[in-house]
Structures are given as C-alpha cells and as structure tokens.
Image (spheres, one colour):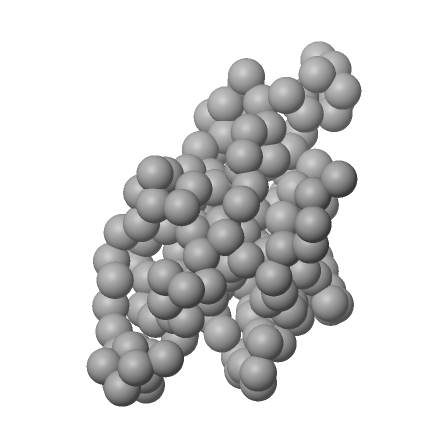
Length: 164
C-alpha cells in the first residue's frame, strides 16, 4: 500500500456515495444475494451507511412468509456484512476488490421489529477495530429512523478460493 492510500485511511477520508455499479466492483455478491443498493456517508477506515430498498419482488418473500412478507433477520445481518465489506475494500484500496469477507462471529444480534415491503433499511456500521485481515464492526439497521436490528460482528477478508 502506498503512503497516499495509508494517509487517506488514517485521516478517515470521506468517499461519500458508492452506487450499485461500484458495489459490484468491490464485492463479489450478485442477485439474488446482493442485498444492498447503495452505500452513503462512507468514511474510509471508520463508518458507512448501507441502503436496502425492500420491495415486494424480493425472492425471499415467496416463502417468508406467504401472505405476510417479512425480511428474514439473517438477511438483515448479511446486509450489515455487505455494507462492512464495501467499507473494508474502499479502505484497503482497489487491490482488495473482489476478495471475500467471511463472518467470524456475530454477537448481540437483536431484532426489534419486522422489515416489510416498502421499507428502506439504512444500515449504519461503525468499525470498532481492525488487526491484519480481521475487522470488527457494530451495526444498527433502521427504518424511518427507528432501530429494527443491531449486531456486533467480526469478519476476515481473504482471497477467493478456486471455483468449483
């Protein structure tokens, strides 16, 4: 990593908005498992806010729950992880694009209210610490400013393994 990139990380350079095209360059997730539509307020090495626009067309609503669609809590947690992955790659730079961020632990996950079609989920993540390729985050997902879920989690960024 060059000195300029290192300085930007240390200073918490503001990136601002990361659109869907850039998200797809930074992380390997694709439909139907790419769960964030945009990342805003990204400050390298510090924090970011992922946005998930929940629509009635989501494939998971076919089975969760028919006639009473609710976004699965584990997918809210996955949205948190994808937001964190964008922050990690934006912090580390282009050379880390396409690498995979794997969960190591999830602590204190709480689900406060259902997320339903029509909701816009804003996933506020803050880096608690990083050491080597291990990062720890705290996230709060909100709809209309009200917390719907939160968790603290650790993840490891790694090279992709050979495809089968």
